Amino acid sequence: MELVCVGLNHRTAPVEVRERFAVPQGRLGASAKELLGIDGLAESVVLSTCNRTEFYLAGDHAEMAAAELRRRLAQAHGADSDPHWYEHHRIQAAKHLCRVVSGLDSMVLGETEIFGQTKDAYQQALSAGATSGVLNRVFQRAFGIGKKVRTDTRIQEGATSVAGAAVELAEKIFGKLAGCRVIVIGAGEMSRQTAQALVSRGASTVFVTNRSYDKAVGLAEEMGGRAVHFDEWQSVLAGVDVVISSTSAPHPVVLPHHIESVRRIRKFRPLFLIDIAVPRDIDPACGEIEEAYLYDIDTLEQLAGEARARREKQIAECDRIIEEELIKLNLPGT
Image 1 (cartoon, rainbow, N blue to C red):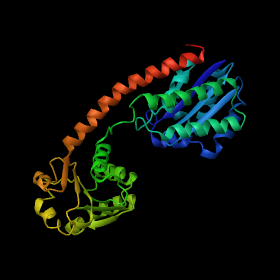
Image 2 (cartoon, rainbow, N blue to C red; image 1 turned 60 degrees about the horizontal axis):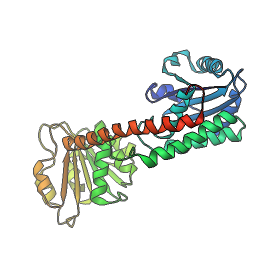
Image 3 (cartoon, rainbow, N blue to C red; image 1 turned 45 degrees about the vertical axis):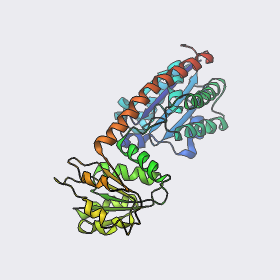
């Protein structure tokens, strides 16, 4: 009995390719069942998320079935997609599944959502009668290994991006971010990523200001926030908890007197200042104000870099656990 995984993901294919091959969530089981019409295929599971579409195949001639599947996909969605596909056989297919379930193959290393998405894909295939002895055993083992990896390692600890590091620092200052109000000065990509990360953790209101007001409007709409004219941003400073600044100005934009002028109105509440501009947007002297917490791009990059280094060590430990546990499956190729 052969085991094969055919797939594409965020590493191998851009979003315009991934969306062509996406399978609707409610059709994963039906799609897995339909694949059994391919000669040589006895079992299948279809996994489809925003970052990947994968087909897990088992049968006496699963490798031949995989080639036929790829031919059909090219015919239906365009042969130009062929370079984006990867294919894993036997134990390597099982190992890939375990890495997916464990969050090791995700855009955000260690993320947990993929575990539930994979479990749902398997349950749909099981309910549709598309799985049997091989895939049932492989998927059930993968779920157990995924739990062990998350329990026995620190793969999820520490933000590995500037935006993530900023959010972790904000949570240390404010506790939960629910209800926090944010002003974004400058509408560039780094500002967007950091603001999105804060909103994903509960920040409730986002103001966006930019010298080009149209760009401020665009980012504000994306965030569900409100645009502010650049000459009026100081008027909202009294009501925010977080300032993200990333403009192309050659000199500081946020100065100590801006913060001093609203301290009493703010009732001396903590103010988190995130300066991700080069040259710096926020005067370093702002960090000397008692309730102001200032972090620049170098500090955030250092924190993210340290987390990345810790994660890299954890990946090796995760792979060791996966390989040790997969030996118990006694799959061909071990």
